[in-house]
Every structure is written in structure tokens, then in C-alpha cells.
Image (cartoon, rainbow, N blue to C red; front, side, top):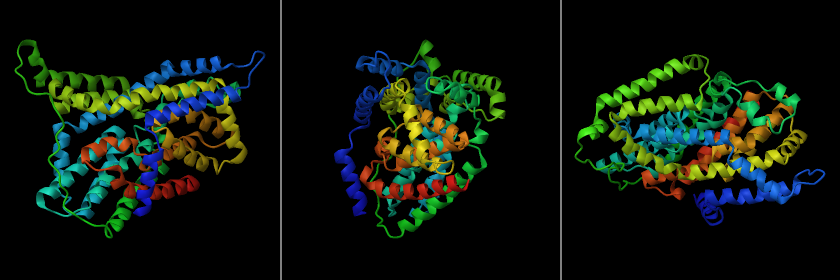
Length: 458
């Protein structure tokens, strides 16, 4: 415990905020771009590097991607704040009257929900952990509440290998790989790229599902063992409620906001359009961000029952997107410099020089984990590191689905060390980062063992 507290102190003292990290990485990339750019007859000046950066920031395709990822988080959060989801959470907590039962319930259900949607899993796990704590406080039952809170965060350790994972969901889009690599790859490399990589080769591949299944069993088993040697106490918590708009007297056209008929008609129209537009894609497991967000939008409106409740939940949920909104463009600017100066190819050649078909996925896994500490965004990381992984995999003959999932595994595993995405959970549970960190570090070690062995075996 003392070691983990020391790590927390070091990170708190020396690790800047995520936005500051993005700025520092931007400045470093600008400097490296100027130093290592190959030059030409006139050379590449500092102002040209700045031009590459600016063009990357406003890359239209990447900005669309950023908005898609923001909607995944927001709509997932909105779904959790609906009455049906709240009732489900309350029913689940009835079975969590001991620390052992709570560990199994919270960790397993959070991982399953996060596999479907990372934003939904993040808030679901946080509220479920909070409700377990509230129940223990009401019944005066001693539990290890920080450990339960850590279980509510474990979904962020499996999300990138799930349906809403940035890398697998983007490569499932027709033409995405070609668009991603078009500015840095040769014609020979582009010719090897598939038009898309469906979910049956990544997220729903038998080997990925096996690894998820192993974690569903191993994580709660390890944490139950750990809990036996920890102290228990009754938490002090009030009932959590998100801030809704105050009810006010509505009249005339304003009554449409509380009309159940309007909400149900509009929600069903969205789901009907979804089935018509994406039925073939769904049957072939070509799940895209637009498809997932369209589904969650319609479902969220139906589950809230009227526009008034939906908008109140939206107002609460959208607070968590501020960091993503401003950081994504900075990472896109970094990618613009790396593309235009040839730095991506240089990094790719380095990996090819020290790796082979067996070790490249392992190098990719650990490098993605390291990058995630400084770039806590799966979408931003895919934009930066994805081209390197694709280029290296093609040169060494590594199957693209395996290389892509190696990056996804590495990106998600160090979420257990990087507290950025834990901020919504900490706010809901009223826990501190140093309270959950000892347990998330244990989960990270277990996850590293599972993913590395999986990449070597499969």
C-alpha cells in the first residue's frame, strides 16, 4: 500500500494536467518535426512545420471522428441517467450486501457494459459502486468501499477491445485505412490495405472474446483474494442524484417537452431508420460510430420518456466532454506534423528493425500503454500511433487485426494507472484517486499478464 501511495504522490507532483501534457507533446513534436524533417531543395522551415500542424488540427475527417467519440461518451452517460437504468442498478445492488458479492457484481457487470459502450460502462460502474456504498451506509454494513469504487472503473480496462473501441470501430468503416495511410504510405503499401476490417476479425474474434472471458473470471477472483487482507468500514454517503432542471409550469407548445407520445414517436422513428439504413452492416458486423450513436440516441430518448428528462440528463452528461473537445484537435495537429515530415515512417522503420512477426504485437502493446499515459484518449492515440502500427505490421507480415487489437489492449490497460478517465467516477463516488489506485494497479498487472500471453498464444 505504501508503494502505491508513493506512486500516487509522484504522479500528482510531476505529472501535469492532461491538457498541459497535450501542449507539451505538441511543442515537442513541432521541435522534432523541424529537426528530423528530410528537407528538400529549399528545406522545410519552422513555419512550414507550423503549417503542417495547423492543417492537422482542422483535418475534417478527424474532426468528425472526434465528434463521434464525444457522442459515444455523452449518449452512454445519458442512458445511465434514465429511470430504467437506475431501477436496474438498484435491483443489482440488493445482491451486493458483502464486499465479496459487491466485487463480483460491480466488476463483472461494469466490464460487460463497457464492452458494449465505454461511456455507458464508465458511468454505470461509477453509479453502481456508489449505490453499493449507499446501501452499506444505510444498513450499517462494513465494506471496502474504495475497492468497490475501483471495480466500477475496471470497464476502462476492456473498452478498447469492445464494440465502442476507437481503433476497431474506425477500421470497420469503408475506406478508413486508406484515408489514414494515404499521406504517408507508398502505393505498394496502400495496395495491401483492405477496404475495411469487420468486427468478426477484431472485437468478435474468438481470441478476443476468450481474453475478455478470462478477465471476467480472473479480475473478481484476484480482488476477492485481495479484499481478505484489507480493512472494512461503514461508508458515509448520501443518496446520489444528478442535477435536473427544476420543474416549471409549462404551457402551449412547451408541453411538447413533457409529451411521452412525441418522445416515443421520435425515438421509434430513429430506431426504424437505423434498422433500414444499417441492417446489412449489422448482419455483417460492420458496426460504425454513426450506427452506434444513432442507436443510443433513439434508445436514450425512449428510456427517458420525454424530451425534458432527456435534455436534463444531456446537460449533466455533457460536462465530461470538455477535455475531449479541446484535446482531440491538438493530437490531430501532432499527427499532421508526423505525417508531413515523415516521422511516422521513421518510427515504423525503427520498430521493424528491432521486431519480428512474433514480437511486434508485444512491442505495440507496451508502446501503446506508454503513449496512453501521456495521450489519455483512444481516438487521439489511434490517430497518432495507428499509422505506425499499420505500416510496421504490413512490413513484417503481422495480421492487421492482431496488430490493431494489440494497440487497443495497450491503450486500455494503463487507464488503470492514468487517472484522467477516473475523474467522473471519483466525482460520483466521492472517492480520491489515491484510494482506488492500489487496486487499479493490481488489476493492471493482471490485465498485462492476460493480454501479453494472449498476443503470444493467439
